[in-house]
Length: 212
Image 1 (tube, rainbow, N blue to C red):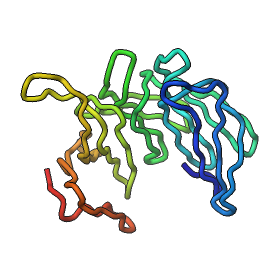
Image 2 (tube, one colour):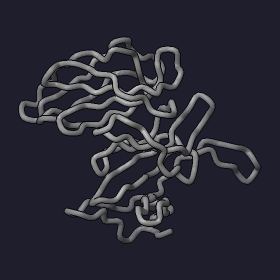
Image 3 (cartoon, rainbow, N blue to C red):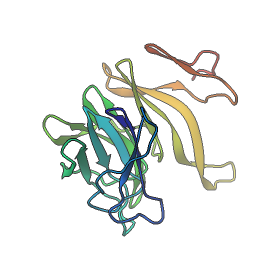
Image 4 (cartoon, rainbow, N blue to C red):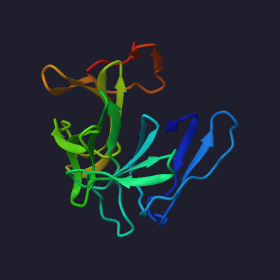
């Protein structure tokens, strides 16, 4: 995650969140690590985004291992954290991205299990609103905004095997959100092993891959 020529790494581990853990930035010009102000609370399994030279930390789990609704923003010019409106659903290990000047989050883990729910945050209004749910409950989903389109990629879901056993399963499919029809559409069922992909100036190149 980048802002003002810095690459930012948020500290914290899945099992032992460190109280007051600090984001650790590295300069993309000098390639030297620095240190910024600590978060006001312990967290892990969260999302970190940057927009207009501000750093957003969203959701995750606290030191009590409960999912959080919290969202904070860090202003590196003022060296201060500010708490913003919380999400409607507490979640961790979810997809998050900046799209059309807003923050989108989808899927993830709640205190009761996986979720498919999604919501969108208006930066200008400091308000969250429901968004079209993802078609499947998943964790570790990746959200990407590319050329004006919102994509969802991969993650983990609980699927039933032939024996009827429910097991966590890694997925590597790609979906996109159809703005006109207000629904998610499958683009690729599976990215084949050892297949290549690259970004062109305004396109995600997925040629030669198995189509859904």
